[in-house]
Length: 318
Image 1: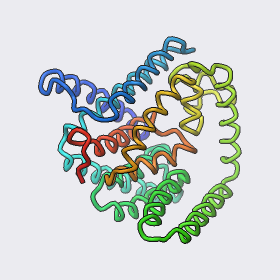
Image 2: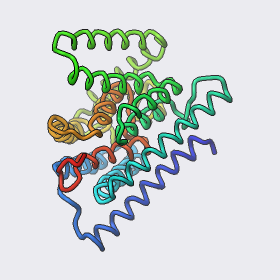
Image 3: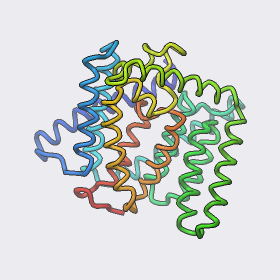
């Protein structure tokens, strides 16, 4: 078993433990979870997965995706109950551990680090973790170094855009923001030209995901069934784009549920001062060229970010 498989299996085990712990805690101790504006949208995503499961081309994959989402829900509600200082400490330990793995791997192999086995997954994990910590700007710099060692262009761009965007709104007048936007666009073009083959490969993948959606537009091919249903690259886990993956797997039903969830989160982001909002924005940008939520560790961190925004019954605590 490789290091990547061990790490991924550990994430799955944590999701299972979180599900058991949430059932025991809210069933025996607290009796009911705290109310947040995300309750109905999160439930809607679960219902959409259950509906599309009935029409899945392979219900084994579909059932697994449903169990993973139940684990994410458990993490979200447990994170609401856990003292925030615990979440911060765990985030700090994890980011230091991931950084150490990246540095050691570069020193040994003399190549860009693949970190925990997949550079995009490691990058997604890092860029979400840095915004769970108190000194966001310090950890952004630390996280940027770690992401550069992985070679994940999507994660690097996401962290850069999130930081520059916030700095631009805070410190620059309107005309200068256009200059910042132009620099970001230039960076995007440079990153795309650095490995053009992967850019064309993503375009073909997106085209295949669009074809899959048009063939089964209402309920898709089934949650988690992209690897068995796509004809361009059988076995590939996703469509290198979160929205296209949802469209291909769960069709209009899934898009409607996820759209509701995104709108609910966006409403809170618009008026929230929570540090975690930057991590969620960065995650959203990264998922324009990847699909990281369905990997256990990035998913765990994203649900932690969401929970940090809705502590004490939805009131921001920072």
